[in-house]
Amino acid sequence: MISEAALRGYILEEVLAWMLRSSGYEVLTAQDDGEEPPWKTLEERNHGLVVRGRGAWRQADTLGQFRYVPPFSLPVRLFVEAKFTQNKVRLATVRNGHGVVHDVNENVMTTLTTHSGPRRPRTRYRYSYAIFSTSGFSQDAQEFALAHQISLVDLSMPDFRNCAPWYAPQQKTSTRPWVRCRQSAFRLSMRSATTCEDPC
Image (tube, rainbow, N blue to C red):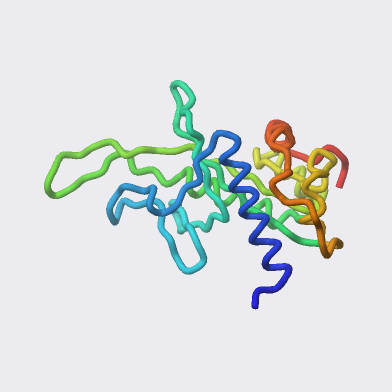
């Protein structure tokens, strides 16, 4: 039987996927990659969705693609990492996010070649990274994220107080459904979430 902690973590990932859809993103799966091996960049493996980087395949808790492409730019994709913990997220987690985003953005293959047809341009994407935490972030994690443009979203902030009953580790039961998490709070935090509002 699944543990309560594992269930809460799974629900948190589902909530974040819902928030992405409500904010202009499409949540991607391996079936959204129309290429054939060896040019595929998305695969489904035992531990979930993975994205091909220059040096390794990178796991994604949730991967979203913005519905609209910015003019004269690349399509935007966003890694979302969910951290349901009782302790603040520390530097190592944020540093890993930076490594993931750097690796996948460096996976450059300008053209695809087939034996049966001509070369054609390969679609490229601009990847970003966001970490959602139920317990905040350490000071050095915030500073590193700000320096490297990693978005940190602290779900313990007042903007997310409607979410608190279902994700707060100290709470055992709740009558409020997670869908009451406000879309406005998510958009506010994504605009200014490179650090927490208050020192952690």
